[in-house]
Image 1 (cartoon, rainbow, N blue to C red):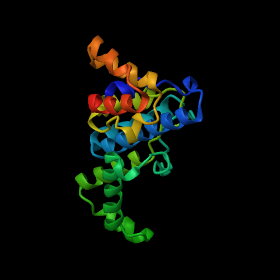
Image 2 (image 1 turned 120 degrees about the vertical axis):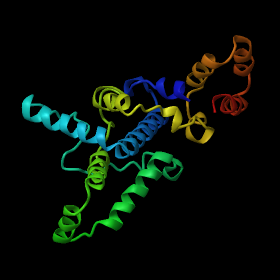
Image 3 (image 1 turned 30 degrees about the vertical axis):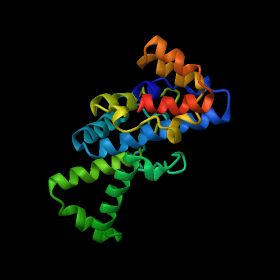
Length: 212
């Protein structure tokens, strides 16, 4: 599973709308995992916020390529994901969001009072969730580098723990050559040649059995 995701090329490597759609879907899966893991790790979320603020204050960095929006705009991933309800990270993050909606009143004064009396642990969790909410990497020139890459490392994210290259999620729309490249990493040469000789749909069915 990791090989499939790590092998996705940059946007410029795609020559069809289908493959571009798949690339954007994989990016959305990655964003969802970063959001959920960051929200669950307040110590890293707060340090990431401090990093962004310090860059702006001391290094004069207000680059539009920053992947966190301090005005806390919601990053909507639902349309980019093929089936949002099947994305574990998206589902868990939505549950966190609904939990906070229930806990925090909407009125300004009422919300302020509710936040004022949160204990430190819950306050850190709320801050982490708000920071994670606006994380996005779509439109950036690199995939898995810069700020998001740093978060991946700090949070010890392994996409293989969150995403599987099932037929619905990847194999039915991925280029056969990309699937073959992943299979060649895990099969003996003889097994790979036998599988690669199969007709297309049987090839994809067999690939799912091997890769997941």
